[in-house]
Every structure is written in structure tokens, then in C-alpha cells.
Length: 372
Image (tube, rainbow, N blue to C red; front, side):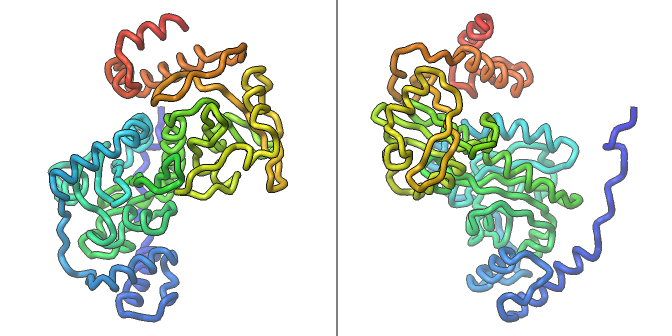
């Protein structure tokens, strides 16, 4: 049987590298802003920020680690992110298995908190960056997908000479920011290769993966009721859904980026009460969950309408209140079993690893699977 992987890699498009080099010469020569047509505007902005910091592209750089106590604090502070990202990063490793790219997870300051994938520890370019605790912020190592993503707050693709320093021109990387349930940036996900062909499709992969991590973080927040949102005509149940958690009083406790955009919430501020967003009594949303009404179009105070699927919380993790009693008609056991089966599948049948990711015992995993 013939596989696509047997085909040789396509040669590097020399015109692409030539355009990057011309842009570098223009900007590094301190030309006026906007004078580098060969690269994306955000790359030029990053280069100019590096120049403003007194950096020079030919200077040698050090990939410095932060202090051991700082690493410990970063790891402890980002436990929710690490838990949410673990299964997604394992899936990424499978998707990139034949590309020689690997995954890096950082905190909001650009400090590496996890790495995963085919890392050649004999290659200094790999061992320099694929280390927990190394500082890969823009201020530390110039223009990279990590620094640019955190500075610009958007997904990026960066190839070879688009990095600021000559020392980092061996890398090609995609990055996407990660936003927490309060709407603020908490880190970023990076996919990096060394001396590899350009793979711009990785920008799409890393963006989807970041969305999955953000949704997992939102679902992990304490909530009494979960609202899945989308515009009329769209199918609910995908990663693109808006996710909103409500406490027992109807106040919003968490929201993913899709919900923030749909409901015009302000990141970093205290979330409002549901009645300040939805132009219906909050009890209507709780009744919809109890009566298993399915997705129902609901009006917003802004005049728009959204599809809303109200679902009771299926557990008490994180100190959330138990769901109100009543016949919800929601197959929670089936959902629970599906999540556990997915974790076992992601762990390639390793029940102990699946239990660790889920935060439950191996015996619980076996018991839940036997009941399905």
C-alpha cells in the first residue's frame, strides 16, 4: 500500500526565503515602519520592538532558565492549564508524528512549563528551547512564535529568517494564545521544528488545539449550569460553541472566547449576571435544563438572538454546588463514560495515565467503564 509519507519533502521555495531576507535587510536597516512588504505586519512590529530593546540580529543569544523557585511557582500556578492541555498535546504529538515538530506550552510570561514530542536532545537547537523553565519571551530571545503570540494575542506562523536573531533562524513554528475562563491570556501553545520544511497548516492545528484547551479550562470551572451557545442555524456540540458557566444564583462564573465575543463580555472584569445578558428571566434557563428542552433560541439585550442549550453540571468538582433536583433527561452517565473512554484512548490504553489526567483512581476508571 502506498502512503503519502513515502514522497520526498518538497524543496524549500527560495523566493519565499528571498522575500524574508529582503524584509530583514529593510527593517534591520531602520527603514520607516511599514516598509517590509515581504513579511506579515505583526512580524515587522516584533522586529522593531526587538530593535527598540537594543537587540542586534547577529548577536549570540542565551536561552536562559528562570530561577528554580520561579519555575516551581509557574508549575504550581498553572496546574489547571497543564491538566487541560495534557490530552490535547498528546493528540498533537500523533498529528505531527511524521513532521519532526514538537509542542511547547508556556505561561503568560513565555516561560516553558511543558514540552512534548520528538525532541532530539543531541541537537543543541532543540535542547536549548525544549526545557521546562527556559524563558522564551520576546524580551529574552527576540521574535519567535512564542513571543509574538503573547505580544500580539493572535495565532501566528513563523518560518526561518522571520525570527529576529540569526541564531533562531533554524526554527519554524506555529503559535496560538491561550485564554482562561476570565478572558485573560494565561499562556500559549507552540509547535516548533528545526531545519524542517515549512508547514503553514500547523497554524490551523495549533489554533484548534488552543480552543480545545480553553474549552476544557472553562468546563473545569465551578458552575451550576452550563450554557452552550451558537448563532441560529449553526449546529451545537462543536468546539466552536460558546461556553458559559452559571452559579446557582445565575451569575456567570466562566466563559470561553467564543462566548465572550458572542455576549460582548469584558475580559478581566467580574462577569455579569445572566439576566444582564439574556433578555429572559434566568429561571427560564434553569427550567430548560430541568425539562431537557434542547437548544432554544433566546434573545439578548443587545437585540441579537442565540441558540442556547442549557445543561446541568454533571459533578461537584472544584467546589461547585450540586445541580438542582429534577428529571433533566440528560444522559450524564453516557457523557461521563464517553469522557473516560476518550481519556483511555488518548493514553493509548494506559488506564493509570488516563486516571492521572482525569484526576480519579484507576479503580474508578474501571468501575465507570463497566457501568456503561
